[in-house]
Every structure is written in C-alpha cells, then in structure tokens.
Image (cartoon, rainbow, N blue to C red; front, top):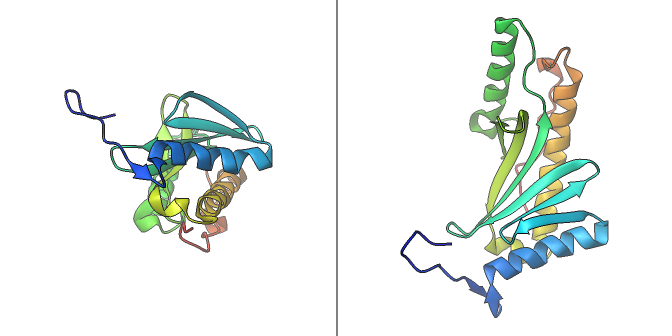
Length: 171
C-alpha cells in the first residue's frame, strides 16, 4: 500500500510482516471469545461484539492500529438549539480527550452514527497482553458513551451524568 508509482513499504517483525502480526493479533483476540470476524480486506476486519460491529484496521503507511465503534445516534431534535447543545456537548467531551479516555468522538454520515475511534502504534501492541488490554479499555470507554447517549431524553445527554473514563487508553 504505497503511493502510486512507489514500492509498498514492507514491515518486518519476528520474521513476518506487520500485516501478518496484525491479523494474528485480531485472531488471537477474537477466537477465544467466540467473536465473529468479517473481512474482505486484509487490512481491516469487523468483529461482532454482541450486535455491535467493532472495526479494527491496520494503517500500513503510518504503522498504526485504528479501532472504531458506533456509540449512539446523532441529535434528532427538531429544535435547532437542542441539536446545537448536543453537538457542543460532544465537542467539549472531545476537547483534550477530557471525557473520552484518549479516544476521539466523531460522526459517520454514511452510517448516521456517533462513533468512537482511536489509533495506536502497532509495534507496542505485539508485546504480551497489550492488544487485548487496549481493546478492552477502548470497549470500556465505548460502553460509557453508549450509556451516556442512551440516558438523555430525546438523544440529548444529561451533562451531569457523564462518567469521566478513569484512564487514558493504555496497554
């Protein structure tokens, strides 16, 4: 996956490519948990966690792992002021990652979902339980946001109820 006209960059680790390492990490995480792995692309997989798709990708050019999950629906209020309050609330939570545990909230217009995503260098995730710990922490932050966005009336979160994640995403 290089730029057009340039050779693809090959990453080597323990006798294999980083892409192979990525695929091995995903399978080692999913199989003992009985998670379904869906993929048409060797660089991206979707893990079904309960009924929720967790997207996990290897970004070869930057050597990063990317994880993304939907955490709620966008504001549906007919009142423009209420919509503006919810978007402002989400932006404030994103500011300096103060209420996202180091991840980033976003909006995916194709799926019409508020999402949570994070990136992490892949190489440190090859050690011990680092990959499992990162995904576990990420899913914990996602669960907090799913609960927060579900608690508010008509899609507007109750600002005083947000539980600040007790950790930054770490391995």
